[in-house]
Image (cartoon, rainbow, N blue to C red):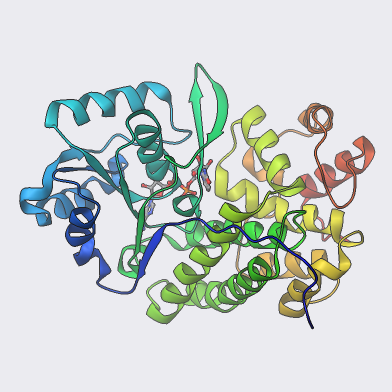
Length: 353
Ligand code: NAD
């Protein structure tokens, strides 16, 4: 079918994909005009970071292995001190969304170029958005200096991502694609990317559950992460992402698990109002899409109940109140009772109807 009028804006990042592409970090650092790069990781990925820093030879400024969840400003200030002390003029972020967040926070303050080597499916590497926390308060900002210049997807690095985190991280990525399908500022190109991303995860996650070292499945999942992340970077998110942020911010819940538990419920909430837009997803997973997503998340062993994250039933009222205080666009307008019911279903782990 011929698309009607649309506007499509795409980020200018350069992307390399393939097994062994980690070996090209040095040439990509040089390509950006960086003379000495600081390698960033979380503490558990420090050894991978050290090997990468070693491989950079003269281009190596040093390593900072203190990246952590929620991008606290105190950690960013510590890393900036290392950047200054080592004379680094660029960063290489090796890790998931937390490490990418630190690289973005440094770039936002200094303008240094970023090469990102993602090892989860979160998708932050292809967005111009930075969320950070100071004294427990989360703020979000965006800008061209925050968007990483170069992304190197080497599936070899994702081979070690534990299977449960691979599953929840994959469902986190799928959430970007699903919300991209009905985004107000969506485009036919983003819908194609979203559908392709959903197919990649539909095929990859069951195989990873069987065997986390299945290379074809790892390649498909990381490719899907890029596609879904590109959608996240290109269009505005809606009820699913906002509700996950409200839950995560208020109750300090783990990022990927929260997304994967909420996904069938948030999509079921809007499915009637966005039936046409979600039709490609229903073709991939089944119709009605909310129940089909619940069946898929169940089949790949994902957590199903907010209760399992330590959320108490008493907390649901407060979350529902907070979720409707700052209204935002959703294909189905937010109503307090509807959101409260959605939260109850997610708390119980019910299959949405
Ligand atoms: P994460 O980066 O916190 O990683 C989780 C843990 O897994 C860490 O300990 C990490 O070291 C480890 N890990 C990562 N890859 C591994 C691998 N291949 N092998 C072994 N261990 C590995 O988790 P995440 O879900 O990738 O990122 C979540 C954070 O990213 C949140 O703070 C979220 O807000 C942010 N985020 C931001 C955006 C954006 O556009 N700004 C998008 C998505 C996520």
